[in-house]
Image (cartoon, rainbow, N blue to C red; front, top):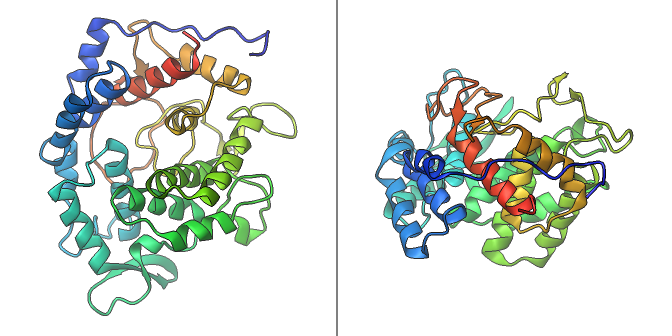
Amino acid sequence: MNPKTAKPKFKEPTKSGIEWLLDSDPAIRWQVMRDLTDESAEAVAAERSRIATEGWGAELLKRQNADGTWGDDGDFPLWNSTLATMQLLWAIGLDPKSDQARRMIGRLSDNVSWVYDKWWNLKSGPDRGGNPYFEGEVEPCINGRVLGFGAHFGEPSEKLAERLIGEQLQDGGWNCEVENGSVRGSFHTTICVLEGLLEYEETTGDAAVRAARLRGEEYLLERRMLRSLLTGKPILVDKQSGKRAKWTQFSFPTTWHYDLLRGLDYLRSAGAAPDKRLADAVALVGKKQQQNGRWPRQNIHRDPVGLEMERARGTASRWNTLRALRVLKRYSGN
């Protein structure tokens, strides 16, 4: 650790803090039991199984259209609503072996393809043509997520994994703007691809995927999770949007957006060892904790899913608190 960087300061979760986290949806409860209270595998699996029939998971499953998609092509195109819903079902941990998950995946896999109509979109039906859904489309920020939840739900695509490996840039990252001349990785695209590669690797054991993923991790570590490699200073402008970067404001659902907590939680889930290059980022997570031991809901993105899981910006967030505590448990040295 940099000698000028203080050890992360944060309050360990109290009994009442854990009870607050557990007083929630099965999607959060099972992860608290697994990551913070170290419950037995049997108890964790039992709680996880409830996602398919209760709360947020059951609601998302109920919203699936008969053709396998989500959404109504209104404020968001079908491809976006479907992608974001599948990403969320993956993130909350819907058991891929459950009957409900198998029916859901069957509808999507059997009926839906990517087609090109001014923009990549979805088409369903017997004469749909186009790429099978789990083989993805053209942008790595989309394809990384498709690879990840496809692998999670039993539809791993070797073709898509090979495509993503072939699109890795010299600096170790990925960028959806390559077709517009970009030769440098993007934090947003890179985190989407890394999460997908990790899930695919855990499903298949693919050594080439692991090698690409570790190169991608170095992309994040070399930049201390949010710094410019050229200047060493925090990145102030998000080139993707042209607006001020809000990567130190934590979000859930994340959709395609990068932030510091998402990056650190990925490294934790990948089993990445503590590294001095993470010190400042981990310390910042600790500083975000409020006096009551909780973390607030911060940067709320436009959400193609539209599922209200938490309250307004600035209020206490169970999702951010859960993820921050497990990151600090892994990397604070406590």
